[in-house]
Image (cartoon, rainbow, N blue to C red; front, side, top):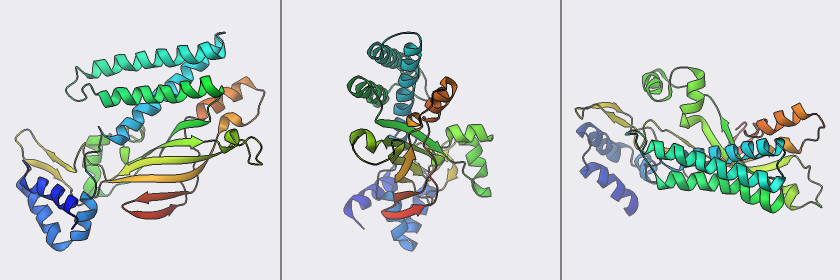
Length: 282
């Protein structure tokens, strides 16, 4: 086993974790060393407070800046003024939200969250000021996950029981995308203006903020599924830029603007767990 992986395993075996968790790790060391290496080849701490969470914050900041800028432009402000007012207002609004999180035991203040807020706002503002259009868009997609009976109770506790709650809270089904419009960078090409290439990020196997274990207030194990691998997922997929579909109808333009928050379902290449896979729809 790689030295870095072994060090992570030893950290769990010598750390302040329940003995049942340690016993399960030792059992995997003996019976399934390859699976154990897959489980520990990356740091496990990328759950609700990790990269996937930061992507969600950045997406919210980008979309809020885009929406408020469009609102200012509708109200009669110029293109540059609208971009500045929308971006600045969005950043300060999200800073207030982050400040309120600082008084929450569950969430707390995070400079990483603030950086994600700023990155989302900057992604919108820099393009609007430089190009007067969004050539690189921050998008979102989600697919409802179906879990086996042994995971149903844990899923209800973490993600809620209703479909709307699951779609919003279940990180295992969410993917965030940077969707790039090649035609805008190569105006002389024969590529259709609405065609984008999207690079996505998601994660799977997440049944807790930092590990697939849970404890009650007495330190007793209430959930232990370290056998489920926590993995990052990277995607490459075609996409559509709905705002580049030509129409003179204002209502349709607004609908296409809103629809551009999400990625169009399409085939994709997925890289996860050191393997390349093909997905028919992502």
